Amino acid sequence: MTAPYDSWVLQTHAEVGDVAQPGSPIVTVYAPQPMRAVVHVPGSRQADALAASAVQVLLPDGRGVKPHEQTRVPAADPVSQTVEWRLGLAADASTGLVPGQPVQVRFVGAVADANANTKASARLTVPTSAVVRRGELTAVYVQRAGKADAAPGFVLRAVRLGAGADKAMVEVLAGLKPGEWVAVDGARAGLQGAQPTSAAPRQP
Image (cartoon, rainbow, N blue to C red):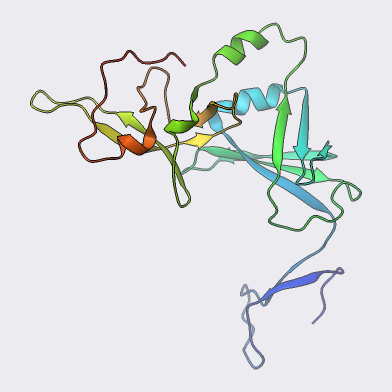
C-alpha cells in the first residue's frame, strides 16, 4: 500500500492481519506541504470578516504572512455558531510548521473606514480579572436576576474571547450581551453566597 504523495504517518488504525473494510481508515498521513491555517469566526463577526481589506496569519515565530488563498465554509456550526475559514499558506511561509501548532489570524479593516471609530467603540470588553479558566472552559460570572424572595447572585457563563484591548481588558466575541452585569473579580464571584454590589454597571 502506497500513498499518492510523499507524506508522514501520524497514526495507524489497523494491525497486521486485520481485514480492511470499505470506509474504515487504515492510517492517518499528512504531507508537509501545502499547509493552511483554520480559524473559526463567530457568526456575529462574519460581516466584519467579509468587509476586511486584508487577512493576515501570525505565525508562532512572530511573522505575519498573507494567505495565497482563502475559503469560507458556507455554513455555521450548529453548536458553536462559528464559521470556518481555511487560509492556504505558501510553501516558503509555512516552512518549519507542523499540523496542530497555534496561530493567530487578523482581519484588517480598511484604513479609511469612516465607521472605524464607531466599530471600535462598539467592541464588548471585560476586565481580565473577570475571566475564569477551568481546564478548557473560559467563562465569566454574570449577575442573574433575583426572585422576590431571594437576593440576586451570579451564574457562570461560557464566553469566547478575542484580542485584549489593553493589559487590563479583553474582548468578548460571544457569550455576553451589552448591558449585562459581570463580576469584576471572577475568583470571588465563584465563592458560595457571593452577591453583587450596588455599584452601577460599566458601559461596554
